[in-house]
Length: 297
Image (cartoon, rainbow, N blue to C red; front, side, top):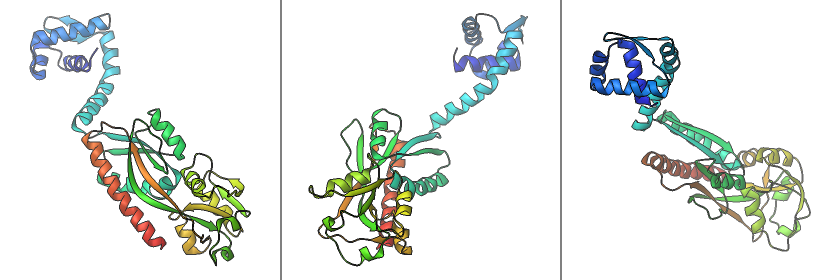
C-alpha cells in the first residue's frame, strides 16, 4: 500500500468512475485499474462494488475511506512541506548558562521571522549533551568548555569569562590570592558541568577548595550566595543583574583568570536550510554575547 494508491482510491471513491478519475489524475485507465487492483490485493479483498463502469464503496471500502481520508490529507501536507522545505524541527540540547540566559530569546526572534521553523530545547550539562550527540538523540548541542572528539563538528561561538562572586561585599574590596579564600565555603556546579570543569582545571594543582555544596542550577547558587560569606565561580553574564543590583559582588583574584569557549556542536552532511539557520545562529549569538559583556563592564 502506497500513498499514491491511497490517492487513487480516494479519487475513485469521490467520482465513482474509472474513466473520469483517470482523466482527473492525469493517468491512463489501465494504470488506475492496476493501482486499485494492487491496493485491494494488499488488503486481501475488494473495496468497491462494480456496476457497469460505476464504482460504489462496499463495507470494507467505507471503513478504509473513513480511516484514510484524514490521514492522507495530513500525509499529503507533510509530503509537500518536506519537498518545499517548509518543515524544520530541531531538537537542541544546551548547557544551562547558554540555555537560560542566551539562546531562548535568539530562537524566539528567529521563529518570529521564520514561522515554519520549530525548536525543542532541552537544558542539560555539557557532559550529558555530548552523550546525547554521540547517541544521536539531538540535532544540535550548545556547550561550554572542552569537547571530546567524536563524529560531529564543533564551531566556536564566543569566549566567555568566569568570575568568582560572593554575597559578602567585604570580600570584593581588594584582590585575593586563591589560597587565601580557599577555606571559605564554596558552592559549585555539579559534576559534568562545563562551568565547574573549566574552573577546576584552571586552579593551581596544590589548591583544595572547601566545597560546602554542589548545586545543578545557576539560579539556586546565586540565591544561596546572597548575604553569605560564601563563594562560587559563574559566568560573568550569568551574574550580570546581581552585580548591577549589588546582591552579589565580584571577588577579584591575583594572577588567576578563568576563560571558556562556548561552542555549537552539530553533525556533518547538513542541508542548505540547516546551514542558513546555523549562519544566523552564529551571527545572533555573537551579537548577544557582545551586548552581554558590554553591559557587564
